[in-house]
Length: 158
Image 1 (tube, rainbow, N blue to C red):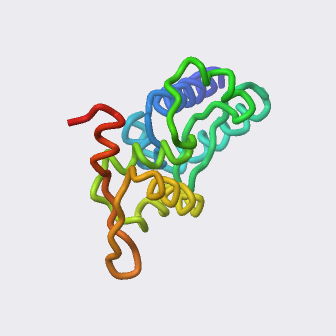
Image 2 (cartoon, helix red, strand yellow):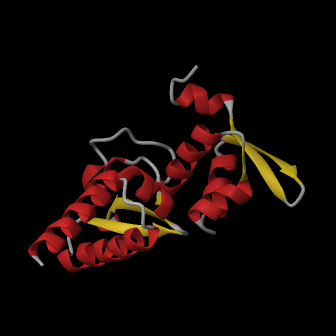
């Protein structure tokens, strides 16, 4: 029985390490691929256990579910502790996360972003449009989104 517990702990540690190092939320199949564990059902169960572990620990870090994806985050209560360590963006944390996703995948359909991050995406996209970091062009019932020149200048990109 001890070997089974050690294997399970090792699998959870691998999942945790992958989520820690990922800059984006990951789905179960992405986690399975990265860990080399074939069973997505087993991965899903371990992720759920990790969520419980983080809640029980009641620490500064939490494992959150964003739609059908998962991500490690600093709890909102502790985010202010780091405000002087990082550059101060003109954007909310959520909008910054959405902007990073857009820039990596542009051009991208708004419906795809909402599918990945949930309905709060609409508020973040509105913020990004108002601050001219993205452009959105209506295509059918959704919008095609891409970054602007202001985005590239703001982040010193070519």
